[in-house]
Amino acid sequence: MRFDGRVHKAGRHWAIEVPILGVASQGRSKRNAYGMIADAIESLVNRAGFRVLVHPGPGAYFEVGASDEAALTAFLLRRTRLRAGLTLAEAAKRLGAKSLNAYARYEQGRAVPTVVKLSELLAAVAPARDFVLSESRSRSSVP
Image (cartoon, rainbow, N blue to C red; front, side, top):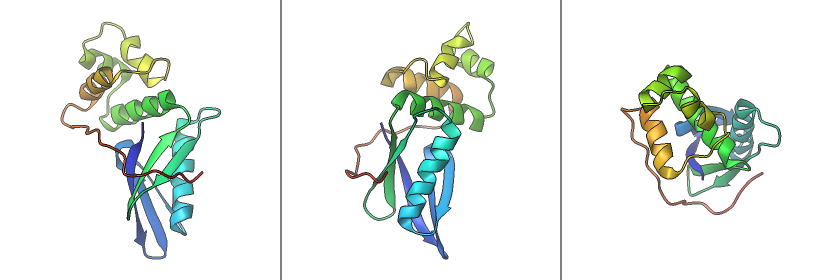
């Protein structure tokens, strides 16, 4: 799984963001910006061995993927919940679960949701937002 991002020249620097994750950074060059966004996500995930791969695309488009999809999915869920201002208990309640663990195990990366379950989890924490899957526009990666 990968998430799309945008990079563009902003004065003397390159601004870069992955909107779905709410992560942004900048670099002195486009290549440096790719490294900075990877470093920002890796730092926020804060898991040993977790590495972000940047896949440059056409123009301002790029994608990020990771060495550990469970950790990346967990990060997406945590960021989405926090951006909505919800606690784990509130997220579990919105999911219709009796146990806090029903939501937390996905957010902690102990379980990887199916596409259907991921849709349910995201709907529980961000009911006013739609999430769109699309085919990749990128093929190469920058470490």
